[in-house]
Amino acid sequence: MNRNLMVASCLAMGLIAGCSSLGVESSHNSISRQAMPADYGWASAEGPLLGGSQASEQHIYTVTNRKEFVVALEQSGNLPSIIQIRGTINLSSDDSGRELKEEDYRVAPYQFDLYKAAYAPSVWNIKPLIKGRPNRKLSGPQEEARQASADRQKAQIVVNIPSNTSLIGLGDDAKIIKGMLYLGAGVENVIIRNIHFEDAFDYFPSWDPGDSFKIDTSYPGCQAKYVNANLGPQKCRGGRWNAEYDLISINGAKRIWIDHCSFSDGDRPDYFFPAVYPFPQNEITQKVQHHDGLIDIINQADLITISSSYFHDHDKAMLIGNSDKKTQDEGHLRVTLHGNYFKNVGQRMPRVRYGQVHSYNNYFVGDASGDGQGANNYERHVDSLKDKPKHNILRQALGAGKHSAIYSEANVFEIANGTPANAIGHMKGDVAFDRGSMFNGQMIDIIAEANKVSGKILSKDVGWQPYLYGPAPLLPVSEVIDYVKANAGAGKL
Image (cartoon, rainbow, N blue to C red):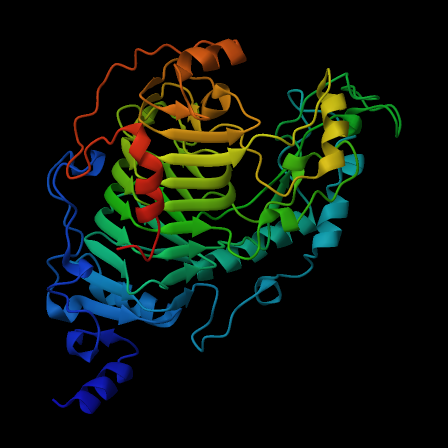
């Protein structure tokens, strides 16, 4: 078949499949055919991770839009497949390529201003508290319509990735934007490389009036029982907006390698959407959140390596384990993080529950200022409103949560206005280990110093030791910054 006929045939299929002679990188000598190197972190603990590297030619696809992407995934199923991304895939678009926005998903009578008014603390919080918090189960036509709208968006922008898949970006500008990749229970053996992921934007975030709610008497008028407009739970701090979508959700899947990818909020960072309720529900953390995590690893997901990737300009980057109550996560959530760059990220790099997480040769850069100064929460809240920082306040880089066992080696933490407790934070955990890491240019015992700052003790006895370094042996900390800057992110393979 001549070149023109081959192009026409491929276009008629709605995607380029099995057409490696079309100027697509040859599947036999490009990164598309590469398996994960042996012994490279937790993802290799149960043997070779091949992804779709052994795909037959008819299961090699090059896609340029959402429609082609979805068709390729449907055709390949769980057979070994290589899906190459060229240009930008906008997951919030219809089959004609038109971008879908809030008005396309909205179900009447939902309107943000009406929703905001219906569940305002001055209206909702004056009802009797339930277990010391406002009722967290919103009801009424606005919440019903919000949920229906959210369901409509979710059906469009969430794409399921099957087992035995390699998802590979071509060139230095391959992007998947405005949606979420979902790797569910039963999925395994997946490779994702060389892709920019941006802006999994939730048009219909939910308000949770009980999230972080506290009867804090440093706030004038704050008390459990409603009396009048100036006395009652509506005068207490608390309540949060919550978004639904991560850029990648690993929800029960196992044996996953994510390498040389970039993750961010794109051109719609959450600081564009400040708090909408008046004091005291206008803390920095009460912004209208339209983005959830960058990568979340939950519900017994296991054996994952994330390497040489760039996480930037986002608040909550990575959750490993999503509930203290999920004891079934014990023995799972084993994750390796190597050679990654975290810049202007607020927290969760990652936050860990239950998992054994190996973090080595990563570079963390951020600013811990912005929460305000004062003798109590009220004074700090008032002071914080003066600066209105646009950076994501770095609270904890590594978060040691319940029954977690983080093993940190030769990481570099550059945290302006921060302390070692911002590098490795106590979040109901018992243990965390670090050796050979640098904090703000100094070689210190980060765990010991963090314990002094927080007054909460993390033991160094994590009960395990990493052994899977593969082709990326531990670098001395003096080489980490140059190595990470040269290698982390999409477009650097």
